[in-house]
Length: 378
Image 1: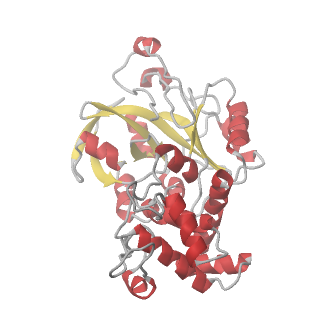
Image 2: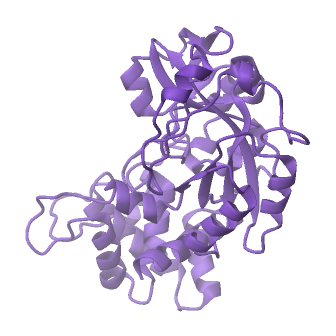
Image 3: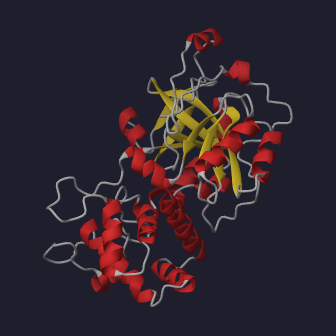
């Protein structure tokens, strides 16, 4: 969990007594000063939420690394990060911990138009979420909403630099482990979040170790902490890949094995990493089975009409093919991709992915994520 430290209700003395927890790449715990101590912006600071390169709304940016600094990241540092050879995009975010219903909540504040492109496709497509944020509301992860017992449409007092009542707009996946809640720039300022506390970086061609070293060098002595945002890393470290731990002998017992077996059995020549990328992008490997706004269902997000033709029983299942069953859905996706990809060329592979979802940004995202899976799992 990323513990950003309390923004309100704590004196500097309280933070002096706090003991940061030893961290790993996926665990970040830092302590922030109170709003009064952090109110003065760093010299030449760049407003949070601005990107090193313009990000059009019709594409998705794949984040690879989240760096959280101890103090505000300066404009000069953001510019250096954006110019790193392997870095494609950079976006700064505000950050801090507030209290909702008496409990600490890690919040990031963002430029909504820019950050939307960095979120998982299922989240980016939910117009209602973004409308709520634009109107000054907040959204949380599903786990945070359950822990805080939040109800959509209800206003809650948020204890921070000020104590405003803010409307809860529902839950969404942000793609950043440890972040409980999200607000827009205006609400971020009202709450007193620390400007440009963190930075999301997209650098799909860089090794994580190399990228982390380069970012650490730019941020210098700020004692930054780092979180891998690569889905393969998150899945393997957080245990999100299992399909069923009690499957009959001979059937894949994890999504990782299921993707590999499905590609081999139902589309020889197709890299399993493409199936894995589609499964992660479409549903988070079964974490969000829909229905989507368009009506797609299941771990591979088939439209019911498409499923009626392409759905199959896989790996020993019997009865009507089940769109919600990964043992049917993943093999069906492999079979569907094969129909669109008669050869093994890059052009045929792109055409197959485009056939799955008619959007050029989707093709680029699947290929980039497949590349990351190949790097991690070989």
